[in-house]
Amino acid sequence: EEEEEEEEMPTLTLRFESGPSDGMEIEIAGPVNVGKDGGGKKSKKSKAGPAPFVLLPDPEVSTRHASLDLKHTFSRGSVASTCLTVKDLGSTNGTYVNGRRLEGKKVKVAWIGDKIRFGGSVAVVGS
Image 1 (cartoon, helix red, strand yellow):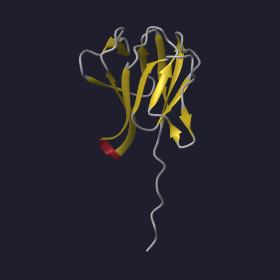
Image 2 (image 1 turned 30 degrees about the vertical axis):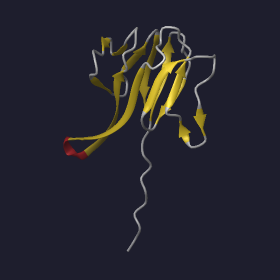
Image 3 (image 1 turned 45 degrees about the vertical axis):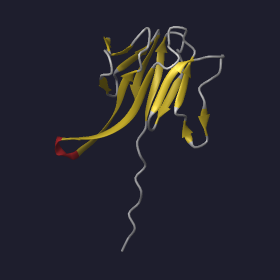
């Protein structure tokens, strides 16, 4: 019997296009928390891949601002799609997906091309 090759799990990126985090790019391969940059540090990445916590250099971002997770879904016709789930963690200035603020503990789905705002920083979801 032939061994099945392991499929490489897709990742998504957040490309910041405005605000204090402009120019940053974050690769997301699983659960990630986003929060305030406490000491001018860059986002932490290990050789094993994206870190579970990303620091944003934005004064409007809360210490524990939002959580993101990668989801793989199948639409009609068994076409695989990848999206992000976005959840605000009680931030002061809010988390927005396509201009709509996440209320309470609700989880919102963000697709490729959608915009996510953390405090004053806006990122676009990319493949």
